[in-house]
Image (cartoon, rainbow, N blue to C red; front, top):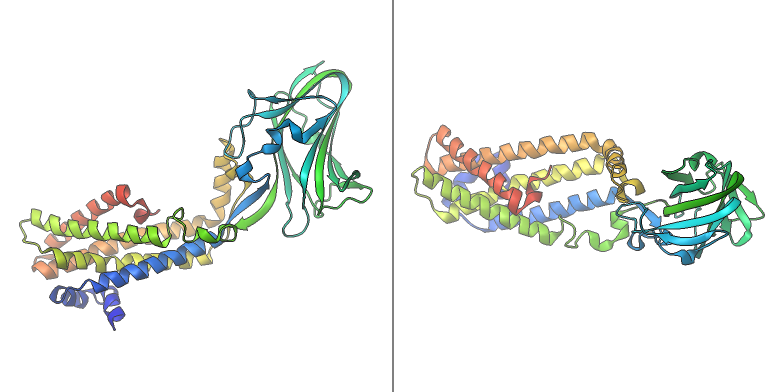
Length: 395
């Protein structure tokens, strides 16, 4: 019965506010707060279960450790770390691996992976990405042949393919992204390799003549395995890092409630009206039922929307590349975002109208005066929320 009284503000606001003004009780806003928290948790679950992040090896927490330490590599060239020329980004460290050799027509380098990884099945990585820069060649020439080997079980068990077309530019960072696994048709095999047991990779560069060569490698990742935020962390739904967690939502509601109630108390005073704190604070709490409805709509739209997949190019944080990847990632949900934007603005107008109805009934004033006070209160309320509770003005 009490819940029915709460929702009467939605379908019969005049009757509801008359009853609230006659018998103001805090239990109504408190129940709305509980509904609001539950609705936000529901939206958070829908959003996080539809948000997928590209998983990498090495893990993001380890950055690109394979190109930060020479111990992972063997080569016929001299191996060193270059701290001046490397890729800047969120997932990238502050150095690259450098390979230098003089008077040779061939350079090879091999990454030895301490724990084997899988590029097979639904839990396997689907892509290999890395950056390579040819910084010094004497005499100047592009490599005539570049081959990539994926080592499995033993050095004789390999997959291989020609990647010359992706790594033939000099003095710039070549960005190679190569599909791996059984579904990629470009790989040939030697002996009996297994995509479920990859223990290393090898790159071989060949030049037409003996040359003095220096190459840099950075940002080497296996990736393409997507997992939802919910699957990655069971605490993501309730942790403080989630802006829709119960604790954050509770604090958000309290801020909205007190700010709106305070403005409904102060603004009429500026018009010469004698105000009373308790009923106006309770009215503000009931007005916030509109935000509960907003979150219900948000949740429904989120459930009906496509998945959002954030790839390595976005998460890696390389300037220019990240922005383009973000636009591509959110393109499938652009229509849903537009719906949420309009719903959000409609709720703001709805809240202002409810405040006008409540003020007119409480103070027996004209519609023009109640609307002026309501719009003034609600406009200032939104401005204050931008600083105090920015999530409340989402989108």
